[in-house]
Length: 233
Ligand SMILES: Nc1ncnc2c1ncn2[C@@H]1O[C@H](COP(=O)(O)OP(=O)(O)OP(=O)(O)O)[C@@H](O)[C@H]1O
Image 1 (cartoon, protein in one colour):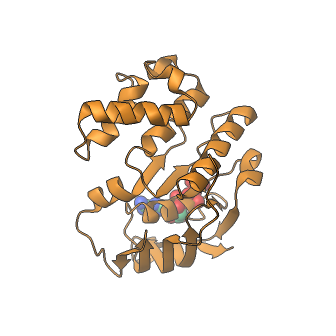
Image 2 (cartoon, rainbow, N blue to C red):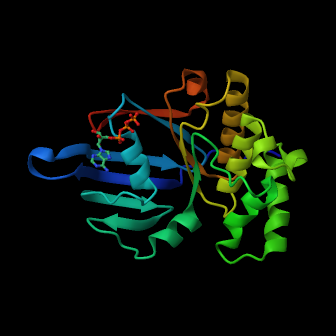
């Protein structure tokens, strides 16, 4: 399939985002005045030393951590402006955001198909339709031949591709990944990153990945570096 031309449609827009945990002597300022815009079709990396705020920033974009101040738009919708603007944050996450973790977190008692299909049934899709779409996604991620395998029978790279298929189940425009290649060797890490890049372009998604992994740096379109909660792009 021909990739569509790069688009500049912003999918993640943050301005003045700060987050502190605790108060008084115990206060930790995890993020200070973070501003960033990430557009459809981009794969960006969040880098920085341990404790610099990468996970906090990813969890803010995921609407899991509530910022202390600032403004955030996701897929053009204002979702935070000093306070959450939506009450149904769980639904917001289901609709707009896909998650890929360091380890695949697949449910061990469901096969590859049903691990992907389950995520779709949470938004009300019927099981048969969900399974058909799960097969399409598993084919797209080049792991369709393992559709009936249980997670324990999958290699690390296969399991991570099933987990990416699951993240795509509800057609999110924003994919958040936490060290998605850390447990993979360089060949498999390259395959996973190539698939993420392809889906960013073909599905016009924005992919934000926390990484320490030198093997994948050349696969990122842009790198944001955090230090002590501040961004130096
Ligand atoms: N729930 C919390 N309560 C209190 N402090 C927290 C909490 N979560 C994070 N912090 C603190 O906020 C700062 C940023 O943490 P964060 O986990 O975002 O860093 P990180 O860059 O992801 O680190 P790592 O690479 O080690 O995962 C750290 O000082 C951390 O101790």
